[in-house]
Image (cartoon, helix red, strand yellow):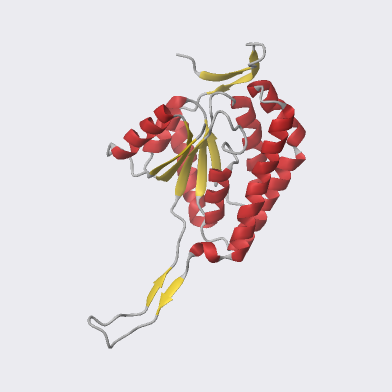
Length: 249
């Protein structure tokens, strides 16, 4: 069994980029545990500050767009025009969630006043949506940016105050590695907690990630078979994760 994930140029069939080592279970545990620790700090960062961090990540991705698009084109053959548009969509998603954070209604805050004259009497009731914990995000093959390492699932989870561990797609490991590098550096430069974002490689690492006890939710975009496998893991009593699927064409 190979211990690396190797990307290939679809135009030539030749290997593309340096192989990426598969993430062993011990490293998955370290990354997930670090994300759980980071969640405690990230979840209480004010929404306006989280918005600023998301915008810095978007700016960093835009600044390295040439390298990212070139890498993705060599690994997916989706074409520079299409990938350039997709990367811009990705950074726009990050900025959109920054706007949502500043607007604030996403927390769905409600307040019901007390009413002692009804049976049974009603106390003051307050409700607000709160971040859940560490989220595992599975990347899609056909959207190496917008539904991948820094895509909508990652952006929304970080915006809400959750930490994120991405499982990179085996079809574009070099693109995933470069994107993750930019995201991690930008988060660090912006002062986000260390470990709030991580990435793992290889099918086995995805299984270990979903089964890890700190993972509270799973975002997935991909095949029916992949979604079925995640569903079975989530329903099999071996994880506390909650699996959600967005099917890609």
